[in-house]
Each structure stands twice: as structure tokens, then as C-alpha cells.
Image (cartoon, rainbow, N blue to C red; front, side, top):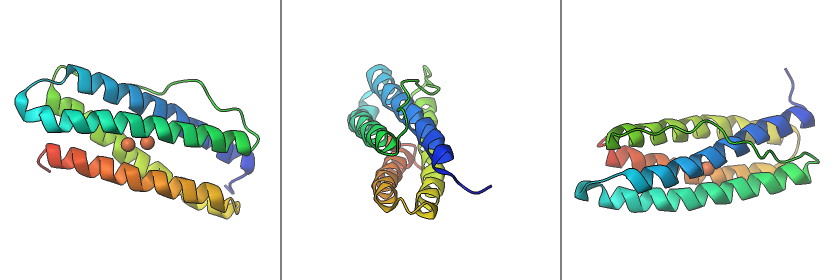
Length: 140
Ligand SMILES: [Fe+2]
Ligand SMILES: [Fe+2]
């Protein structure tokens, strides 16, 4: 199916909801994670949370620019009482985001929305850094 402006707005709103969820999930995980060995990654998770909020702001602005209504719903949030399980939940989220943004960049370019594609590339680069931080903390 060919991408349309309307379909792209709807997909960007799903991305936005997942950015809100990622920000909340990182705030939660950074707060409940314990143990001296996790001190460095806890600091990273707090940085990730602020970067996810920046992604949400960028997406909301782009959705508005495209003539859509930015969603105020929040995607699914996962947590655990186990540190490594939380880090795996975060990594799963990042890997999903990387897959989605690669597709979204192609869809934006198909509609000649090159400025949007540029913003999505910037977000993608940050999600890849997030995934690398999490893999390192998980010893992967
Ligand atoms: Fe993000
Ligand atoms: Fe991320």
C-alpha cells in the first residue's frame, strides 16, 4: 500500500505515543533500579528519558506541521523488579524504535517530506546510541 499523508500522520502519532511511554519507562527504571554495579547505567537511563521527551516534542511539532493533531495518549510501559529484565525491556523498546524509524524515514522521503526525514534521521541516531548503551550494560 502506498503511503499517504494521512497514514504517515497516524504512524507518527503511534511513534509519539511510544516516545511518551519510553520517557516514563526510563524515569521509572532509573528510580527503582538498585545496586552499585548499576550506578553508571542508571545515570544513562535518566539521560535517555530526557532525550525521549525531546523526540516527543520533535514529533508533536512535525505532526502539527503536517496538519495532524498530536496524540496525547501514551503507549505501553513495561517494568520489573529485576534490573536486567528492565534493561532488556528498554533494549526491546529501542530495537522496535530503530525498526520503526528506518521505515518512517523511507515513508517521509516517499512523500518528499525531506525536513521530516532529516528530523527522523536525527532521532534514529539517538535511538541507536541508546541501544548500544543498553547492550553494553547487559554485557551483549
Ligand atoms: Fe526516542
Ligand atoms: Fe531511545
